[in-house]
Amino acid sequence: MTKDLIVNLALLTAFIFLSSRLLKPAAPLGLNDKAYRWKVGALHGLFGIVLMYFSVHIDNVTILDLRQIIILAAAQFGGIHASLLSGIIIGLGRITLFGGMNKSSLTAAATALIVGAGSGMIAHYIQHYWKRWMMSIFMSALVISGSLFWLFDMNPASHIIVSFTTLITLGGLFVAGLIRHLHNADELVVQLERSEARYRRLASLHEAIFHAPSDLAFLVTDERGKVTMFNSGAEKMLGYRAQETVDKLTVVLLAQDREIALVPEDEAGYGERPKYRSIVHADPLMEAEIQGEAAEKEWTFTKQGGQSIDVSVMISQVRENGSSMNSYLFVIADVTQKKLAEAKLMEANRMLCQLSRLDGLTQIPNRRSLDESLRECWDHAVSHSQALSFILLDIDYFKRYNDTYSHLGGDQCLKQVAAAIAASVRQENDYPARYGGEEFAVILPATKLEQAMQAAENIREAVAALRIQHIGSKAGQHLTVSLGVASIIPYPGAEPQDIVSMADKALYRAKQEGRNRACRYHP
Image (tube, rainbow, N blue to C red; front, side):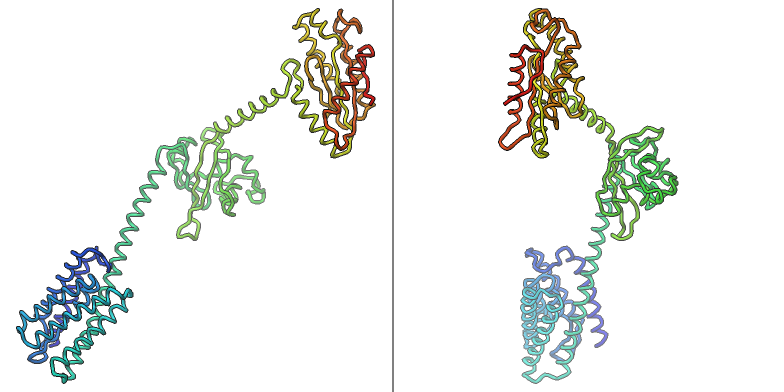
């Protein structure tokens, strides 16, 4: 009897192992593939018949084997469809091959069918693996016990009840543990295969990125800054060959002394550049990265041969298992041409801005620049309660000068007068400009009326000192100018144009009084 039970258990173990291999792709319960379910039911049903060939005869009408457990296994793999089909096949096998149409065979067939239906329903509604198995085993023990009471007219022998209950319980737990173990092993294999495939993809991607032809340089260093990997882009950019740098060069040696000097001297090895200085102290960029700040900065590297290039360096720490730091990854882009282009653009913008504010003929500020500066000086005078003065001057009889000496001569005259006005302005903040035509203006911040009158007289004398011949002038033999001077401490409601209007009225008075003079504004 023991020998037959051992054979029964060995066959069951072998079948569970083989079926788990064959059914592995569709193992999760709840699949909608009906063909798979019928295949599971058929395989388990046929194997249940095989188990009956190695059953143990307890008496003339009762045989003991593990066929009910195979029905429970079918329910776990294929649900109610599989367990019902296996129960039907096992029941028909019991009737056809082991006893014919007698009470014992019919009872065994009915038991197999009921166990198939019950275990299938439990597998359908219970999701927890062990709870599902425990309920199925308990249900099978009840059904088998009930069938024994029916078979023996409510008076079965106690040893028969104990034998069936013990076998279904222990066998069921053994098969449940075996299936779970095989399932976990399959999951580990799948995870291992996926990890291996992912590693291979990442390795291929790493090789493709790191060694692809590119204008980017990729460097990997150890924690001391010593180069361990050097890609083809780095060879092209920095002029070194990979074999010349790996284990021989540090990133520190690429940077310039003036930038290394940015590191505090007590951290820089007494001002020297040791060959393998700690990367933490090699570069403020690395220090910033370690502190969690932005790890990208524009730097200057020296190529092999001594040529300097501007680079944009991005650095990140490479950690193993997310803990200890193992190395640094540098991504370096040559921005030399970009920096040159930016510098040229800035210079062009500066010159364009300057040209837009200068008068093209006289090369002193134009009317637009004058208006902007007057507004700024006015606002400053308002906020500081300071006086602001303004001079407006006009070349005397300039139309006659043009008629006499031509427009080319007139242009030359305007240039000379503008230069004389600019030279006579002595205060740093005084602002001379061409107002329009033959008119000029000067803004005098923080200047009172008497000081402004003196400035106007200086301008008049500077123009007279040019001794430009002017035979058409009624004011004298040489070129002269008339000036109007106004001064004001801005008050509420006043505007910058007010002081211009005041200076214009003073200029009109200077012309009325004979020209070649400076007049102040009187309300």
